[in-house]
Length: 243
Image 1 (cartoon, one colour):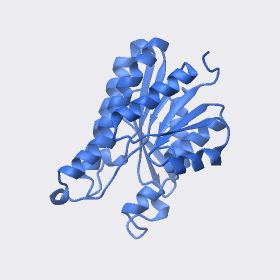
Image 2: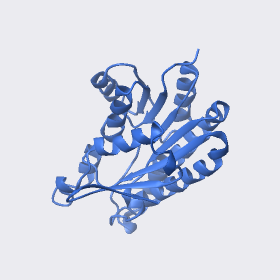
Image 3: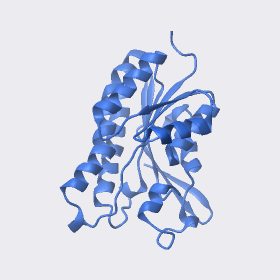
Image 4: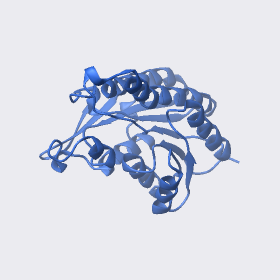
């Protein structure tokens, strides 16, 4: 029997933007499944939210493992309303230091994994005649920080895959969005940049981004399907650029 509540899968849901998005949707009555590589962190994240939050240990760099989550969740609830592709990988590497391993890791997590998950969810959306795909991209796809040669390329690829999904999905009721924040105050950011390089005052909060993700998932931003919603914090608040 199909769940009466909408269902979302959020990759990389144990911390940062993914956790904030899970909390936002769960508080609005959604059933949320979060994925990540660390089982203990996932369970702690779910406990911090409470309610109907499911956890699935899966590495986005392993497309088959990530796809099995889609199949498990959709079979369990007999529906899938939103696929939120948030898991990401980033290293700051100059072009001379961007070797084949860096390229493979960046594209595996940030581009190939999401592409395959969209592919595996497509049949579910087609059968339902509905579905929303939200890719968490980056402002780096528009204005790459030095050292983001690989990372920026992967996020630009994600933006174009989202646009393709929106165009191909329109006849079957599928919408797709890229949400592309600038610096966000997370552990991932601080693993790459200290406050001397990226001050807290220049950073978005995970909740700033989660609010836009939730608006896309719930249909409030359907007019932006196929577009990239760039977010940036300036001195007077959070600003959007939609392209």
